[in-house]
Image (cartoon, rainbow, N blue to C red; front, side, top):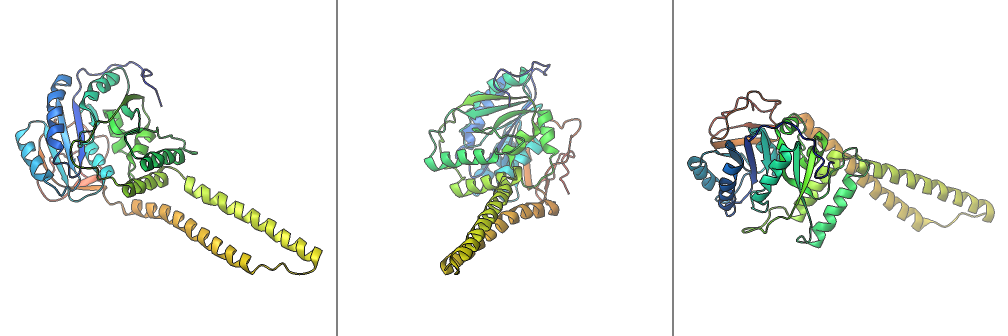
Length: 353
Protein backbone atom coordinates (compact mmCIF):
# COMPACT_ATOMS: atom_id res chain seq x y z
CA UNK A 1 0.00 0.00 0.00
CA UNK A 2 1.49 3.31 -1.04
CA UNK A 3 1.98 5.94 1.63
CA UNK A 4 1.24 9.68 1.21
CA UNK A 5 3.55 11.21 -1.34
CA UNK A 6 4.16 8.01 -3.33
CA UNK A 7 1.69 8.73 -6.13
CA UNK A 8 3.11 8.90 -9.63
CA UNK A 9 2.18 12.08 -11.51
CA UNK A 10 -0.05 11.56 -14.54
CA UNK A 11 -2.46 13.50 -16.69
CA UNK A 12 -5.88 14.09 -15.16
CA UNK A 13 -8.93 15.90 -16.44
CA UNK A 14 -9.21 19.21 -14.63
CA UNK A 15 -11.69 19.53 -13.15
CA UNK A 16 -13.27 16.04 -13.17
CA UNK A 17 -16.94 15.18 -12.82
CA UNK A 18 -17.50 14.08 -9.21
CA UNK A 19 -20.03 11.63 -7.81
CA UNK A 20 -20.52 11.53 -4.04
CA UNK A 21 -22.22 8.36 -2.79
CA UNK A 22 -24.00 8.46 0.57
CA UNK A 23 -25.40 5.15 1.89
CA UNK A 24 -28.08 5.99 4.44
CA UNK A 25 -30.15 4.09 6.97
CA UNK A 26 -32.47 6.11 9.26
CA UNK A 27 -30.44 9.30 8.78
CA UNK A 28 -33.25 11.82 8.35
CA UNK A 29 -31.84 13.95 11.18
CA UNK A 30 -28.35 14.13 9.66
CA UNK A 31 -28.93 14.19 5.90
CA UNK A 32 -30.02 17.88 5.60
CA UNK A 33 -26.79 19.07 7.21
CA UNK A 34 -24.62 16.72 5.13
CA UNK A 35 -26.37 17.65 1.86
CA UNK A 36 -26.04 21.35 2.65
CA UNK A 37 -22.31 20.95 3.33
CA UNK A 38 -21.86 19.11 0.02
CA UNK A 39 -23.90 21.71 -1.87
CA UNK A 40 -21.54 24.39 -0.60
CA UNK A 41 -18.31 22.45 -1.21
CA UNK A 42 -18.81 20.68 -4.55
CA UNK A 43 -19.19 23.73 -6.89
CA UNK A 44 -15.72 24.92 -5.87
CA UNK A 45 -14.24 21.49 -6.65
CA UNK A 46 -15.92 20.65 -9.95
CA UNK A 47 -18.36 22.23 -12.36
CA UNK A 48 -20.05 18.87 -12.93
CA UNK A 49 -21.02 16.87 -9.87
CA UNK A 50 -23.77 14.74 -8.40
CA UNK A 51 -24.82 13.37 -5.04
CA UNK A 52 -26.17 9.81 -4.97
CA UNK A 53 -28.06 8.95 -1.77
CA UNK A 54 -28.75 5.22 -1.38
CA UNK A 55 -31.51 4.58 1.15
CA UNK A 56 -30.99 1.10 2.61
CA UNK A 57 -34.62 0.58 3.60
CA UNK A 58 -34.90 3.39 6.17
CA UNK A 59 -37.85 3.34 8.54
CA UNK A 60 -37.76 6.98 9.59
CA UNK A 61 -38.55 10.11 7.55
CA UNK A 62 -35.61 9.58 5.16
CA UNK A 63 -37.78 8.55 2.14
CA UNK A 64 -40.05 11.59 2.37
CA UNK A 65 -37.13 13.93 3.01
CA UNK A 66 -35.10 12.63 0.08
CA UNK A 67 -37.99 12.54 -2.40
CA UNK A 68 -38.60 16.23 -1.71
CA UNK A 69 -34.89 17.07 -1.85
CA UNK A 70 -34.35 15.16 -5.12
CA UNK A 71 -37.22 17.08 -6.70
CA UNK A 72 -35.89 20.46 -5.55
CA UNK A 73 -32.11 20.07 -5.85
CA UNK A 74 -30.32 19.74 -9.15
CA UNK A 75 -27.64 17.06 -9.24
CA UNK A 76 -29.16 14.98 -6.44
CA UNK A 77 -30.17 11.37 -7.10
CA UNK A 78 -32.07 9.28 -4.58
CA UNK A 79 -32.13 5.48 -4.78
CA UNK A 80 -34.40 3.63 -2.39
CA UNK A 81 -33.63 -0.06 -2.03
CA UNK A 82 -36.60 -2.40 -1.77
CA UNK A 83 -35.56 -3.40 1.78
CA UNK A 84 -32.61 -3.26 4.14
CA UNK A 85 -29.79 -5.15 2.41
CA UNK A 86 -26.93 -3.85 4.58
CA UNK A 87 -24.30 -1.19 4.11
CA UNK A 88 -22.13 -3.31 1.80
CA UNK A 89 -25.04 -3.71 -0.61
CA UNK A 90 -25.89 0.01 -0.37
CA UNK A 91 -22.28 0.91 -1.20
CA UNK A 92 -22.40 -1.48 -4.14
CA UNK A 93 -25.60 0.15 -5.40
CA UNK A 94 -24.04 3.60 -5.15
CA UNK A 95 -20.90 2.49 -7.00
CA UNK A 96 -23.04 0.89 -9.73
CA UNK A 97 -25.03 4.08 -10.30
CA UNK A 98 -22.32 6.72 -9.88
CA UNK A 99 -21.38 8.36 -13.18
CA UNK A 100 -18.50 10.68 -12.33
CA UNK A 101 -14.84 10.55 -13.35
CA UNK A 102 -14.14 10.13 -9.64
CA UNK A 103 -16.45 8.64 -7.01
CA UNK A 104 -16.34 9.58 -3.33
CA UNK A 105 -17.85 7.28 -0.71
CA UNK A 106 -19.00 8.99 2.49
CA UNK A 107 -21.25 8.13 5.42
CA UNK A 108 -24.55 10.00 5.67
CA UNK A 109 -24.22 10.61 9.42
CA UNK A 110 -21.93 13.62 8.98
CA UNK A 111 -18.89 12.07 10.64
CA UNK A 112 -16.85 12.14 7.44
CA UNK A 113 -15.70 15.76 7.05
CA UNK A 114 -16.50 17.39 3.71
CA UNK A 115 -13.25 19.37 4.07
CA UNK A 116 -11.36 16.17 3.16
CA UNK A 117 -12.69 16.28 -0.41
CA UNK A 118 -10.22 18.95 -1.57
CA UNK A 119 -7.04 17.15 -0.41
CA UNK A 120 -8.42 13.88 -1.77
CA UNK A 121 -8.93 15.49 -5.16
CA UNK A 122 -5.42 16.99 -5.03
CA UNK A 123 -3.98 13.51 -4.38
CA UNK A 124 -5.96 12.15 -7.32
CA UNK A 125 -4.63 14.89 -9.59
CA UNK A 126 -1.12 13.97 -8.42
CA UNK A 127 -1.59 10.46 -9.77
CA UNK A 128 -3.34 8.41 -7.08
CA UNK A 129 -6.18 6.25 -8.36
CA UNK A 130 -7.62 5.60 -4.90
CA UNK A 131 -7.34 8.05 -2.00
CA UNK A 132 -8.32 6.63 1.38
CA UNK A 133 -8.98 8.51 4.60
CA UNK A 134 -7.34 6.67 7.51
CA UNK A 135 -8.24 7.35 11.14
CA UNK A 136 -5.46 8.94 13.17
CA UNK A 137 -6.82 7.49 16.41
CA UNK A 138 -9.59 5.28 17.79
CA UNK A 139 -9.59 6.91 21.21
CA UNK A 140 -13.23 7.96 20.68
CA UNK A 141 -14.36 4.31 20.45
CA UNK A 142 -15.12 1.88 23.23
CA UNK A 143 -12.60 -0.67 24.45
CA UNK A 144 -14.54 -3.64 23.05
CA UNK A 145 -14.69 -2.12 19.56
CA UNK A 146 -11.00 -1.15 19.60
CA UNK A 147 -9.93 -4.64 20.67
CA UNK A 148 -12.29 -6.28 18.18
CA UNK A 149 -11.02 -4.08 15.34
CA UNK A 150 -7.39 -4.84 16.17
CA UNK A 151 -8.10 -8.58 16.38
CA UNK A 152 -10.01 -8.60 13.10
CA UNK A 153 -7.23 -6.97 11.08
CA UNK A 154 -4.64 -9.24 12.68
CA UNK A 155 -6.61 -12.36 11.72
CA UNK A 156 -7.65 -11.11 8.28
CA UNK A 157 -4.07 -10.32 7.28
CA UNK A 158 -2.48 -13.57 8.48
CA UNK A 159 -1.33 -15.35 5.35
CA UNK A 160 -3.41 -13.09 3.12
CA UNK A 161 -1.78 -12.17 -0.21
CA UNK A 162 -3.73 -8.89 -0.17
CA UNK A 163 -3.41 -7.13 3.21
CA UNK A 164 -6.30 -4.94 4.33
CA UNK A 165 -4.90 -1.72 5.85
CA UNK A 166 -6.03 -1.11 9.43
CA UNK A 167 -7.87 2.11 10.18
CA UNK A 168 -9.08 2.56 6.60
CA UNK A 169 -12.85 2.48 6.21
CA UNK A 170 -15.23 3.27 3.38
CA UNK A 171 -14.40 6.99 3.27
CA UNK A 172 -12.40 7.27 0.06
CA UNK A 173 -12.11 8.74 -3.43
CA UNK A 174 -11.82 6.37 -6.39
CA UNK A 175 -10.88 6.90 -10.00
CA UNK A 176 -13.32 5.66 -12.64
CA UNK A 177 -10.99 2.74 -13.42
CA UNK A 178 -11.21 1.59 -9.81
CA UNK A 179 -15.00 1.92 -9.87
CA UNK A 180 -15.25 -0.12 -13.07
CA UNK A 181 -12.98 -2.79 -11.56
CA UNK A 182 -15.21 -3.04 -8.48
CA UNK A 183 -18.32 -3.27 -10.65
CA UNK A 184 -16.78 -6.16 -12.55
CA UNK A 185 -16.37 -8.30 -9.42
CA UNK A 186 -19.15 -10.91 -9.42
CA UNK A 187 -19.39 -12.10 -5.81
CA UNK A 188 -22.60 -11.71 -3.81
CA UNK A 189 -21.01 -11.75 -0.35
CA UNK A 190 -19.59 -8.25 -0.51
CA UNK A 191 -16.95 -7.25 2.01
CA UNK A 192 -16.05 -3.87 0.56
CA UNK A 193 -12.89 -3.20 2.57
CA UNK A 194 -11.45 -6.41 1.21
CA UNK A 195 -12.58 -5.65 -2.34
CA UNK A 196 -10.98 -2.20 -2.25
CA UNK A 197 -7.67 -3.83 -1.30
CA UNK A 198 -8.04 -6.67 -3.81
CA UNK A 199 -8.44 -4.46 -6.90
CA UNK A 200 -5.19 -2.69 -6.01
CA UNK A 201 -4.31 0.45 -8.07
CA UNK A 202 -2.15 3.37 -6.98
CA UNK A 203 -3.35 4.24 -3.48
CA UNK A 204 -2.64 7.13 -1.15
CA UNK A 205 -3.61 7.41 2.52
CA UNK A 206 -4.67 10.69 4.11
CA UNK A 207 -5.04 10.96 7.91
CA UNK A 208 -8.24 12.34 9.39
CA UNK A 209 -10.39 12.24 12.50
CA UNK A 210 -14.16 11.67 12.20
CA UNK A 211 -16.41 14.40 13.46
CA UNK A 212 -18.86 13.90 16.28
CA UNK A 213 -22.24 12.51 15.32
CA UNK A 214 -24.80 15.32 15.61
CA UNK A 215 -28.00 13.30 15.81
CA UNK A 216 -29.15 9.73 16.30
CA UNK A 217 -26.87 6.81 16.91
CA UNK A 218 -25.10 4.32 14.70
CA UNK A 219 -27.04 1.29 13.48
CA UNK A 220 -23.88 -0.83 13.72
CA UNK A 221 -24.06 -2.69 17.01
CA UNK A 222 -21.21 -4.89 18.23
CA UNK A 223 -23.23 -7.88 17.05
CA UNK A 224 -23.55 -6.54 13.50
CA UNK A 225 -19.90 -5.54 13.45
CA UNK A 226 -18.92 -9.04 14.59
CA UNK A 227 -21.07 -10.57 11.84
CA UNK A 228 -19.49 -8.27 9.24
CA UNK A 229 -16.02 -9.17 10.52
CA UNK A 230 -16.80 -12.88 10.25
CA UNK A 231 -18.05 -12.35 6.70
CA UNK A 232 -14.80 -10.58 5.91
CA UNK A 233 -12.70 -13.39 7.39
CA UNK A 234 -14.50 -16.12 5.46
CA UNK A 235 -14.62 -14.07 2.24
CA UNK A 236 -10.96 -13.10 2.06
CA UNK A 237 -8.91 -15.67 3.93
CA UNK A 238 -8.76 -19.41 4.51
CA UNK A 239 -7.25 -18.80 7.94
CA UNK A 240 -10.20 -20.31 9.90
CA UNK A 241 -9.93 -23.54 7.90
CA UNK A 242 -6.19 -23.63 8.41
CA UNK A 243 -6.61 -23.13 12.16
CA UNK A 244 -8.81 -26.20 12.42
CA UNK A 245 -6.51 -28.20 10.18
CA UNK A 246 -3.63 -27.34 12.47
CA UNK A 247 -5.68 -28.09 15.57
CA UNK A 248 -6.67 -31.46 14.12
CA UNK A 249 -3.02 -32.31 13.43
CA UNK A 250 -2.05 -31.25 16.96
CA UNK A 251 -4.80 -33.35 18.55
CA UNK A 252 -3.74 -36.33 16.42
CA UNK A 253 -0.13 -36.00 17.62
CA UNK A 254 -1.25 -35.69 21.26
CA UNK A 255 -3.46 -38.76 20.82
CA UNK A 256 -0.57 -40.80 19.39
CA UNK A 257 1.62 -39.74 22.30
CA UNK A 258 -1.06 -40.60 24.84
CA UNK A 259 -1.60 -44.00 23.18
CA UNK A 260 2.12 -44.68 23.44
CA UNK A 261 2.02 -43.75 27.12
CA UNK A 262 -0.79 -46.24 27.76
CA UNK A 263 1.09 -49.04 25.95
CA UNK A 264 4.24 -48.38 27.96
CA UNK A 265 2.30 -48.26 31.22
CA UNK A 266 0.71 -51.65 30.50
CA UNK A 267 4.07 -53.20 29.54
CA UNK A 268 5.89 -51.78 32.56
CA UNK A 269 3.27 -52.16 35.26
CA UNK A 270 1.20 -55.02 33.88
CA UNK A 271 -2.23 -53.50 34.35
CA UNK A 272 -4.50 -51.12 32.51
CA UNK A 273 -4.36 -47.47 33.43
CA UNK A 274 -7.71 -46.41 34.99
CA UNK A 275 -9.13 -43.86 32.56
CA UNK A 276 -12.90 -43.57 32.67
CA UNK A 277 -12.82 -39.77 33.38
CA UNK A 278 -10.16 -39.35 30.70
CA UNK A 279 -12.28 -41.19 28.12
CA UNK A 280 -15.42 -39.18 28.89
CA UNK A 281 -13.54 -35.88 28.85
CA UNK A 282 -11.80 -36.81 25.61
CA UNK A 283 -15.05 -37.78 23.91
CA UNK A 284 -16.73 -34.52 24.94
CA UNK A 285 -13.71 -32.46 23.85
CA UNK A 286 -13.39 -34.11 20.46
CA UNK A 287 -17.15 -33.89 19.88
CA UNK A 288 -17.03 -30.15 20.51
CA UNK A 289 -14.03 -29.73 18.21
CA UNK A 290 -15.75 -31.70 15.45
CA UNK A 291 -18.98 -29.72 15.69
CA UNK A 292 -17.10 -26.41 15.71
CA UNK A 293 -14.97 -27.39 12.73
CA UNK A 294 -18.07 -28.57 10.85
CA UNK A 295 -19.64 -25.19 11.59
CA UNK A 296 -16.63 -23.34 10.16
CA UNK A 297 -16.71 -25.55 7.08
CA UNK A 298 -20.45 -24.96 6.81
CA UNK A 299 -19.89 -21.19 6.69
CA UNK A 300 -17.69 -21.58 3.64
CA UNK A 301 -20.18 -23.96 2.02
CA UNK A 302 -22.92 -21.42 2.75
CA UNK A 303 -20.90 -18.76 0.94
CA UNK A 304 -20.66 -21.08 -2.06
CA UNK A 305 -24.43 -21.68 -1.91
CA UNK A 306 -25.10 -17.93 -1.93
CA UNK A 307 -22.84 -17.44 -4.94
CA UNK A 308 -24.41 -20.31 -6.89
CA UNK A 309 -27.93 -18.88 -6.47
CA UNK A 310 -26.76 -15.70 -8.25
CA UNK A 311 -29.31 -13.45 -6.63
CA UNK A 312 -28.66 -9.74 -7.07
CA UNK A 313 -26.84 -8.00 -4.24
CA UNK A 314 -29.61 -5.41 -3.98
CA UNK A 315 -32.93 -4.39 -5.51
CA UNK A 316 -33.74 -0.75 -6.25
CA UNK A 317 -37.39 -0.15 -5.47
CA UNK A 318 -37.50 3.45 -6.75
CA UNK A 319 -35.25 6.30 -7.74
CA UNK A 320 -35.74 10.03 -8.02
CA UNK A 321 -33.83 13.00 -9.33
CA UNK A 322 -31.20 13.42 -12.01
CA UNK A 323 -27.46 13.61 -11.79
CA UNK A 324 -24.60 13.46 -14.26
CA UNK A 325 -25.21 12.21 -17.82
CA UNK A 326 -24.63 8.56 -18.57
CA UNK A 327 -21.06 7.52 -19.36
CA UNK A 328 -20.34 6.58 -22.96
CA UNK A 329 -19.92 2.90 -22.07
CA UNK A 330 -20.26 0.73 -19.01
CA UNK A 331 -17.31 -1.43 -18.01
CA UNK A 332 -19.24 -4.25 -16.42
CA UNK A 333 -22.60 -5.49 -15.13
CA UNK A 334 -24.22 -4.05 -12.06
CA UNK A 335 -24.64 -6.18 -8.97
CA UNK A 336 -28.32 -5.32 -8.54
CA UNK A 337 -31.49 -4.61 -10.44
CA UNK A 338 -34.57 -2.40 -10.25
CA UNK A 339 -38.07 -3.55 -9.37
CA UNK A 340 -41.21 -1.47 -9.22
CA UNK A 341 -41.30 2.30 -8.72
CA UNK A 342 -40.06 4.70 -11.37
CA UNK A 343 -38.31 2.90 -14.21
CA UNK A 344 -34.53 2.69 -14.24
CA UNK A 345 -33.23 5.37 -16.59
CA UNK A 346 -29.78 3.81 -16.98
CA UNK A 347 -29.44 1.13 -19.69
CA UNK A 348 -25.85 0.56 -18.59
CA UNK A 349 -27.08 -0.99 -15.36
CA UNK A 350 -29.38 -3.86 -16.38
CA UNK A 351 -28.70 -5.92 -13.25
CA UNK A 352 -26.82 -9.19 -13.01
CA UNK A 353 -28.79 -12.37 -13.63
